[in-house]
Length: 158
Length: 281
Ligand code: HEC
Ligand code: HEC
Ligand code: HEC
Image (cartoon, rainbow over all chains, first blue to last red; front, side):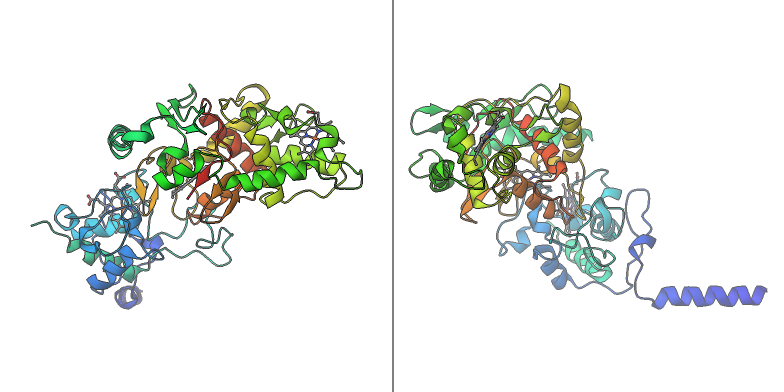
């Protein structure tokens, strides 16, 4: 019995360590909305993070936030605060929580949750206006969240 | 909560005044003579805004200019077509609108009170419903498509008869349950982006969202001529577009949900002049 339980535990943790990513429904936020553990275990790629932040079809973060580092992308919004210096203001765990689901940090914020796949009112099939035909996926993948987090961490104001 | 309210107030105080100094703080005047109320005190039922603005104030100088003179307003082509349609016999009954209605001027004032509850059926009706009822029941003609050119041209022509009059839709009595339904929708955070109409048009009006300057989302100028699409845009089509942009499943044009939302949104603009047909980018 004891032994079997132990093996089982080993197997499960083993799976968790290798199974690349934490499902959106299994993410643990701390009391302030931060996520301590990487969603994938793979360090993010800041260059790809920058692309996601600027890309309309991805994060489209610049729709609401201005980012001086991305000045080559036209039309930055003013709905959210400027992201310059976000890497000074927030730890990596806090940034991960903010990008995954900012509502855990700022209750009721207009900022969308990028790592969440249920609990919506009339979700659609992306921007078609139609009902989804397949199960919803989060707007960004686990690795894309990690990429954005690493990019945000580079936004320092010296 | 508190900080957000403060931010919202700051946005209201700082933004429009700073970014819209000059002509934009002045009221809209059309054809050098028709003085419109395009900025005014918010109606009493509106809790979160003090001042209401027509969408005209948020557009570029070039787009604004197209609306201040009817000769430059591209929507007028469609209005002229509707003038002809008004006289055109269609349907099995062999009648035109003009057979029964003593000129389109007889509809003066109607737009300012739309949508309204139909006393007979108890249903909330919008202008498209009134027009299609005459087409199907009285002319025995086919109903016009909601956002089609014929329909929106006619909606614009009838709306134009009330241009300059203050919007004044009823929200009490029979209208109350529809108004409540529309209000509930206005504050519902639809779609995968979880954004309500209020998130954009009440909390963030005056702010840029990507390349768009957010207005208060008023409908006193609808149908509007949209330069991007080169045609008249119906109210329900605009609602559909905004909900689609939240990654949501939208409601249909001509749905009861959008009728209710139309009543609520119209009521937020009570006091602004009917501006039909407005011009947008
Ligand atoms: C629809 C608007 C919107 C979008 C899209 C959006 N945000 Fe935000 N974001 C906000 C708002 C508003 C706040 C401020 C929090 C509050 O008080 O509600 C915020 C806050 C933040 C903060 C903390 C602000 C600080 O102090 O630096 C970060 C970091 C951030 N967002 C990153 C992102 C990233 C990365 C994306 C895209 C993956 C994104 N946001 C997309 C609206 C948005
Ligand atoms: C056979 C007669 C007839 C024809 C043809 C007809 N209507 Fe009507 N219309 C009526 C009657 C009757 C009413 C209801 C009484 C009223 O409100 O004037 C009405 C009502 C309306 C109303 C609502 C007025 C209000 O104050 O609520 C509108 C708008 C309208 N018609 C537009 C049109 C248009 C546009 C056309 C042509 C496409 C048209 N009608 C063709 C007879 C007609
Ligand atoms: C993600 C942000 C967003 C949301 C949510 C949103 N809108 Fe909009 N809306 C816009 C933008 C951007 C425009 C174009 C610029 C403008 O006129 O404000 C617009 C324009 C409009 C207009 C045209 C205003 C004019 O003067 O031409 C109306 C009406 C409107 N919205 C109503 C609504 C309603 C009703 C809802 C909710 C069902 C809604 N919007 C939700 C972003 C949004």
